[in-house]
Image (cartoon, rainbow, N blue to C red; front, side):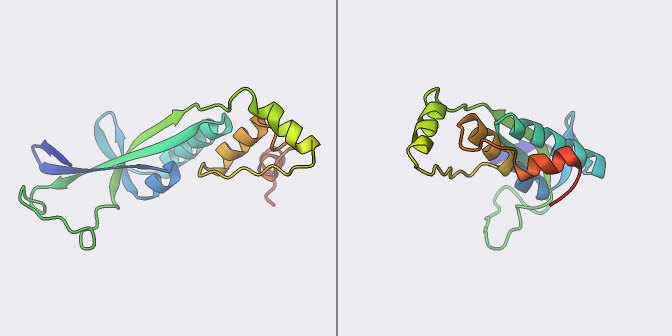
Length: 156
């Protein structure tokens, strides 16, 4: 995208699964300043992402990277196969969206199950979000392995 700053003609923007965006970043935007990622920031990111997911919220991660004028002049011709623009980004943040199931879904799932129909949910959401939504819809009715692991402090 054309997004000029004093040091850059172009800026790469990326959105997607928060953990994938996080992995492509080397920096974090803190109050408009780029700071290197640290273990402390990683823990905070993981905690926030898990909290949103446990609430059944869909989460998107966002990153950017201003490309230096010295390497990418205004007339630069980008080549997706040659230019490594997808790493070393600056993590901007996450956005969570609440998209609850329709009111009739939990009852419909129970009716299907009582009729012997096995209900399966297919989603692109991260596992913690998918589990939360599946519980809201009566697809999962018992404690999950991840919840047991978190509750007991043991991994399985």
